[in-house]
Image 1 (spheres, rainbow, N blue to C red):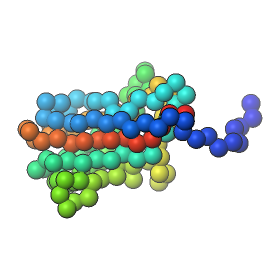
Image 2: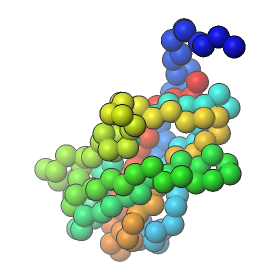
Image 3: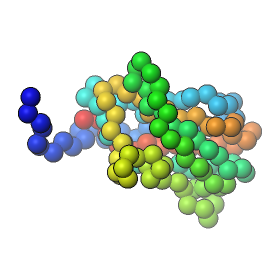
Image 4: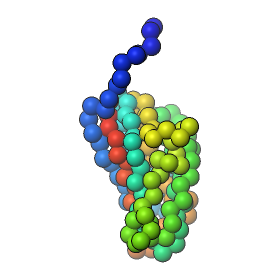
Length: 131
């Protein structure tokens, strides 16, 4: 089969997110689920009002296995104070690309490496689209 030489663009814009709170502990949570034709994530925006720094572990679930893809450090107050929100894509994308592609039905997941402080939250928003 010949390779596709035509550019492929996202058809349906998707903004999906997850708030991580203390009750979530270190459980792996769903952030973004790709559609039937796959998806592209163009940005992962992370903010935290925690009074401690937070480390987030990201994973891709292909329906059979969950693969760890990287860790993102989120400083105290990122996005809520004078500290800028974190662009998780800069840390997670392969070969310094500015996007992450997901196969059909694949799921981007996240967990806090240590539980978020009580009454605080970390927000993870994936911006992209389905093909």
